[in-house]
Image (cartoon, rainbow, N blue to C red):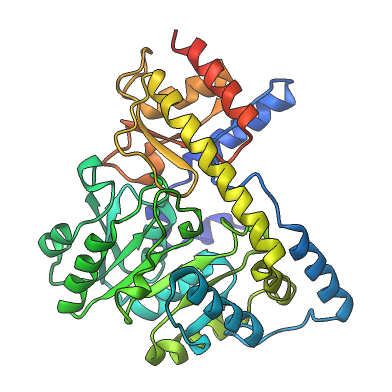
Length: 393
C-alpha cells in the first residue's frame, strides 16, 4: 500500500499531542524497569464506580437492556438528572431539555456541531482544557485563547469578553470549576459574562463537570443565571465513572431537536448499560458514598496546597473545586525553574513523580505553571511531597 497517498486532513496540524500522555508513557517504561512512580498527572479519580452502580449495571445486563436507546437517552435517566438539579441547585429543569451523551467529550462535540459555524470564533481562557479548542476546530471554527492569569482566577471575565468579541466571534466556552486550575468563575462574574454574550446574540457553553466537587461554597449552575446557556456535565468526576463514558447536556427547548438529530448521526446513543447503571447514582446509598469521597478530596486539597507552597511551588489562586492545583514553578530551587516542560521531565526521572507542564493548556502559562492532580491517595501525596522536597533541596 502506498501510504503517501493517504494524506491526513489539514486540521490535524492544529492538534498537539498531550504532554501528559507522553509523560505517562515514559512513566510506564520506568515502572517496567522496576521504578516506583507516583502518578499525579492524569485527571481521573482514584475512586471507581460506587457499589450500587455496579449492582445496577449487573442487573441491567442480566435483564438484557443492552440494545440501542433513543438518541436523547432513556427517559428515567433524563428525569433523574432533572431531579438532581432540583436537589443540588434548587432549579427546575424539564427532563425534555436533558440530552444524555457518551461522556462530556461527546457533549462538547455535539454542542460545537450544533453551534459553531465555519470560520466562527469562540472565546475561551488561556489556560483551558486542551480538547476544548480542538472541539471547536473539528467543526472548522477557531478558538481564541484569552490570557487569563491569577488576577482573573485563570478564568474569562465579562470585561475580557467585551474587549475581545469581534466580527467573527459567535460565543464562549467556559469551565467552572476549571481543568487545569480547579478555580471557579464567581457567580456575579458569570452572570455578567452571560449578559455580555446575550447582548451580542452569541452562545455560551459552560462545562460544569466538576461542580459536584466544589469545596468552599455551594456550586451555582449557569442554568440558574440564564435559560439560553448550554451546560455540560458528566458521570466521570463526581460520580467516579470515567470509563463508562456517560455525560449529559442541558440545552434550550428550541435546540433539543437539533441536538437529537446530530446525536443520532454521530453517536446513535450513549451506552445502554451505563445509562441504566447511572440511575443508581442518585440513590441515597450512592450519594452518601459520593459525599464521603468529596470530603476526602477536600482533605487532600487542604493538605497539598500548603505542602506545595513549602516547596517553592506558589499557588496564586487556591483551587475551590475539582482535584487540581495550578502552581507557579518559577520560584523553585532547580535549574529548570520557569521551564515547566524540563522541570516535569526532571521530576519524573529524578523523583519518580508525574506532574503536567502548562504546555497542554495554552501558551500563556505554558512555561511558568504545572498542574498537580490530587486524585490519588493521601499516602501517595505525602510520599510525593517528600520526594519533591529532596528533589528541590
